[in-house]
Length: 339
Image (cartoon, one colour):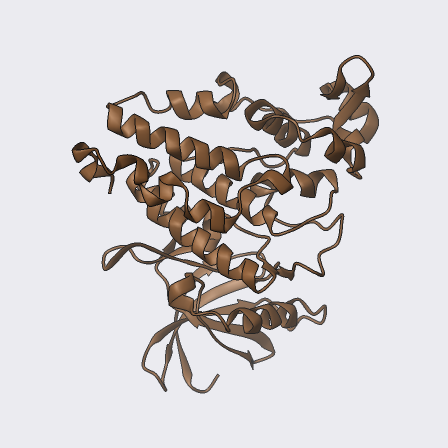
């Protein structure tokens, strides 16, 4: 566009590239998402429509990226946003170690605020992952974040059963099993992001859906019987027996049903009995105050990763959780390092 000057490319994705540009009108640096070609399938228009709906929210109070404008340049469809520094994925990769609880807390708090705001206007983000949470400026505004990428966002009253959404490692069980979908899928994503920041790796594997469901059963358990009964794809992964109820199919049974041999690879989480065991043992206990904080972190994480969407914690409920409010640490003078 005539009032934007290209500086350099800063990232690339399935959609195309992101460029850093200078806006000659405002003199500010902006990020421009450049789609690979002038698409005719409506994906760009859909994202712009979602962004216009979200623009009604205060981008600072709700921690949602500020959408500037949409334009066509040399037959490429472009969307301009405020310039942000790096994603949570980039941060963890650069540090080569997980975040501490006092770093995870403000990120979690802000994400919950973003999803509470989206829930109020009836929008499901549907693609929460560390790549789509950006740090504003690690030096000047430590752990101030913005939620980005509304390309898969959908009004909650228009989402359909069987819709595919979310990155594989961040995909809620109701999506995989073919159950009714709601804003609860985003809270599953919040839990997955919290776990990624805590462990420094994805809690659930990607690539093989059987392996992902197997890990879910190991760490957080089975969905309720009524969900299993009505899931369109339940019998792909589970088998019903009158004596034992629902159970996970064996790899051989899964292959017989799907014709695909599951790729179950060894992972870090294989040695843990469940999610509590993983959080409890990793890392080793340091002191009583940190361990008390870790317990509250686990309780919130478990509530986000409830396999039953109607029982999953909501953004509003989570904003009042002890891990976020730090109510459990108010009487501990030694808790200063966790604040």
